[in-house]
Image 1 (tube, helix red, strand yellow):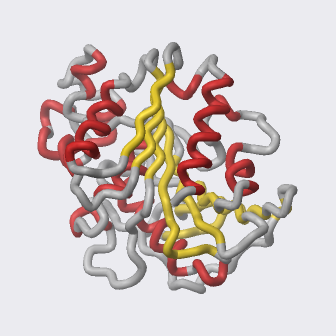
Image 2 (cartoon, rainbow, N blue to C red):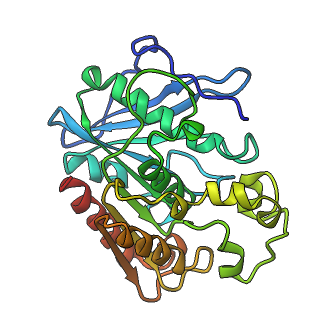
Length: 297
């Protein structure tokens, strides 16, 4: 069992001074949302719109669970001004871009424990921050899309909550937007034509062992295994030419959600690769669709 992230008391951590980002958007950077003994603090950047209280979306970065940081929505948006997060905030939706432990620091389910702790922290301080605790959603790309999907599908699962037995705000989210997410880790090696006994794959590093060696753990870490009729609405976006996470992974989750009667929309892009590389028009469309989806929740 990995160490569990312990959120500080609701008002124990002073907030940093805001940075103005234009059009009424302010940014609180490097805010600690949880602490771990002997480990780096877990931090988030919060982009706040002018109009508050505002709905908030928790953004989880990609990087195969072993790389990446909260500072980027993906390489397709690098160097953009305003940033992708600022664009979302200008549309009236606060963005909490969160870091979590990477697979070199801790194995599954530490990453999910961390992002759930971030949701609870945001709800605990919603009044102070000008957030609407009743409108919390999740958004992620690649490995972050996987964790965002699990935020939507595992609320109330004690073994995946992190702080087992803790009382306080819920870690549930009201909607999920996932870009090119891994959704079925058990089948991912086969979808890629890869070796399920390989110990150096991204999913093996997340799980702490090759997929074939830990089938129960691989299933537990797969969003498709947690679909139920109580799941929130989903938006799935995926490129048909994705070389790292085949589009069938999103199709599989869409089918499971549809079978459970959950509202789900899957948009696919012909010729688009992972991370929208080489397709700036797709990157623009994906961001616009995500804003529209989140605004309607």
